[in-house]
Length: 306
Image (cartoon, rainbow, N blue to C red; front, side):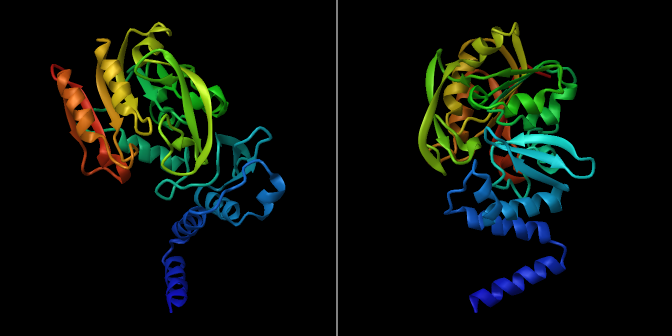
């Protein structure tokens, strides 16, 4: 009976024009307990999950992806046969979108803007901590002054550099943001956006790599930047350490957005981030009307800002 109900549900979704959502849901379900091969082309041809992901890309973005020799995936837009973004893994949907897609970019733009409180303005100097493949630059780089993307994955992967190469104001920092100048061991996940100083909360590969690390102010000063208009932090559970060190430096940071979702031993860090912000005289809020995990993003601005 349960199997029959699933079939009826699937038929109903297709009938109601929800084919893309159905494919994404099935793919995510398959992924939960499967170690997906990333670099073996022959296995790629027969992996059910990969085939589902290709179907989803085709339906949702009119694109296909092929594996790169050095790892990761190249996305090809079929209407023009032009090369799109590069992504480390084709698997894993984000609210029924793929990292860097047009739909995902719009989602990120909406989530990291809090109208009437904290938004990106023309010529802002933006610093993106935890840039991953550069999706936030797709949202804001064209109207920013300098757009600095900080991500340790850039030390071992060229995806972030490739995806931001069309922006003349984009600067890549292939280091980790942290509370002090040091070297950090980054624990790797099957899903590279889950890589963390902490133990990854899913897809732990039990392997790691080491990168240089420093505070956000030190990293941007090395680029000749003396203030930040908009600082975004998404660091898989260690946002408090990064933010505390950034504010303790006394560099001028006007607006802040911190992803505080449950990445620190399964708990969010909203209250901890709020306490830090208050101690440095920032007003902070969350946007409970935001989509997805956007309600767990803490927005802040200096109290004397207009």
